[in-house]
Image 1: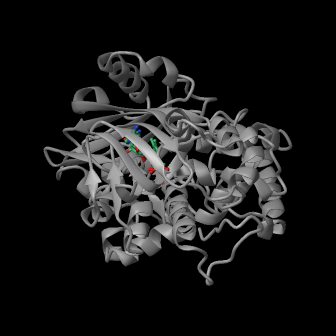
Image 2: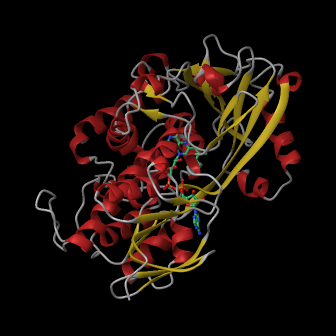
Image 3: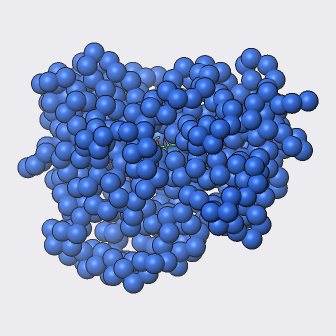
Length: 456
Ligand SMILES: Cc1cc2nc3c(=O)[nH]c(=O)nc-3n(C[C@H](O)[C@H](O)[C@H](O)COP(=O)(O)OP(=O)(O)OC[C@H]3O[C@@H](n4cnc5c(N)ncnc54)[C@H](O)[C@@H]3O)c2cc1C
């Protein structure tokens, strides 16, 4: 029996849309199934009375996001639509916001580190510079750090490095617990992306690329896939609309969801899927009647609040400083990010309680917040970011060396890279694997030992 489609893609996040875009470009019939009524997944944003609210991702760097910028260029998005973010990031320590985070000047200004911490930061940076070539963000399992956790790495240095640099960065950006997540993915990423002064955001909201990609694709929103079964040469999907068959299916959902949907994964796939745990994230957007921001001598777009200073928040982002179009003129938009230790209990709490807890904690950093609030929105992701644990690092080589099959995967977790760039790269890789299976090898792409191919 002829399958209904060449390829069925499950999930219209940036990984699924990239996969579908690449396969469509190659001339295959592709349909994307998305359970939400909108595309973008964790890069979705919405518009409300002149505010543009990023629900998940917030920014992208100019460097280290090669695949994303190639897509930006291919879709004809002018670089002016992806401007530099305004303001600087800072770390809160002992009652003050300290700027210079992840900038070379941190060695001089401290950026929240005391003198011994600065010396040890210099030692860590010198070690990284010596081993620069051994770090590759596409292969975090191959670095000289092995499977050491962030806490284990930090144990070699002054406690400031953990408490006022590694923990707040990992906690606020990824919701990570430094005792559980491996150091290599974070250091590989930081090595690539450069200082925050070069970071950017999409002027029109973080879903820009997803919307542009979806325009040229067959995307069925509001359509959940309940099961995917691999057959010898095809895959079967149980969808809201009935059974669909395809020559290939690509699961572009977080690993725990893929594990639940895939009825018969191969052993190496099943091992990696179960090792790829995710951290939940939760944040509250506060639409304000004035442009308030964390108190500091210069405009801050982000204030990290380390575990050592705060147990409710991991950070506060001033979206209207990040880009003025996020709020109407004269108004403000703040994003309050919940501390990873608080997220599990907040996930089941009523929204009103969540807002009270987070805004209550934020008043310490943003004077006047209690009088400026107009409206709040809670955004929770049960699967916020891949946790990149030592177990996941250990399982990844066998997963990456697997032979191609009728069911493939894409998502940030495939690269163990907790960023949209990881998702885009995984999408391109999944597309090349599907093409090599359906069409045979392409001579211009290097092939590894087992006949799989890696282009990302
Ligand atoms: C709070 C937060 C902040 C972040 N900040 C940044 C940042 O600043 N910069 C950055 O680069 N990255 C950031 N990220 C990470 C980035 O958002 C993700 O890496 C990226 O969006 C992942 O894309 P994806 O396509 O792999 O997964 P997802 O975006 O999760 O897409 C999966 C899609 O599958 C759909 N789906 C799930 N189950 C089914 C089903 N059964 N049937 C059909 N559809 C289904 C979902 O609805 C979703 O649309 C952040 C993430 C979070 C949560």
